[in-house]
Every structure is written in structure tokens, then in C-alpha cells.
Image (cartoon, rainbow, N blue to C red; front, side, top):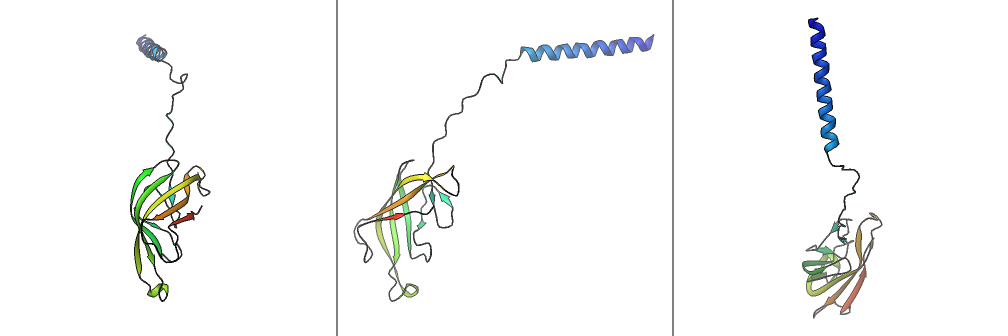
Length: 154
């Protein structure tokens, strides 16, 4: 008889715990029925460099990937939106006189503008600028126009 009382007590205790768990669960508000709103992330457009690294507001950027004879330095960005970006800085250009290995680098103040954002072929979910325009603020390298536009790699 003693074994029956213990078995009955265990059965009653298990039933009580199960009833309590079901009551608590049924009293909880439903979570799966109401979808959560996800705020849309702003589109962040990047600048892709020679080594396929993406960057936002870089301070330096190599224009002549093959030999490094033209680069932008000290870039200070005043605008960076999904449509365009604008910075001021210095374009360091090798004069290649008498040849590039023996040439000297000269600095030219420039305004840099980026535009034409498009999906990047390497990562289609990433937008990148595809055009850069340099406007020389005074002196400029020999043979350069005051405004020079470059397509950027994809």
C-alpha cells in the first residue's frame, strides 16, 4: 500500500506541474502572429580601390593602380550620400622626367567628386561609385585639363 501512495503522489505532482506549465504558456501573449517591423537600413555607397577593398570616406586613394604614379592624399570629405560624394585633398603625380623611376612627385590641390552609384559586380548587394571627377584648384600636371573624369573599376 505504501508503494501505491508514493506512485499516486508522484502522478499527482506531475499532473500539477503539467497543468501549471500549460496555464502559464496559454497566458503568454502570442509572439509569432505579429510580424516585427524592420527599419530599412540606409544605403551606404562605397569606393572600391585597386585591391578590391571597399571604403567609405578614405583619406588616401591610388589612381594609378599599375605603378602608383598618381594618388590622392589628405582627403577631407564634406559630403557622402547614396548619390554623390565630395572631398578636397591633394593629387600627388609623378612627372616621370626623365622617366618614372627617376621622376619627382608634385602636389596639386583638387576637389574630388564621386557619382554614378551602381551595384558592384563582385558583391551585387553593395553599391559603389563608378565615376570620379577631379577639379584642379590652380596648378595641374602637364597635359591635364582643369577637370578630369575617370571611370572607376568594377
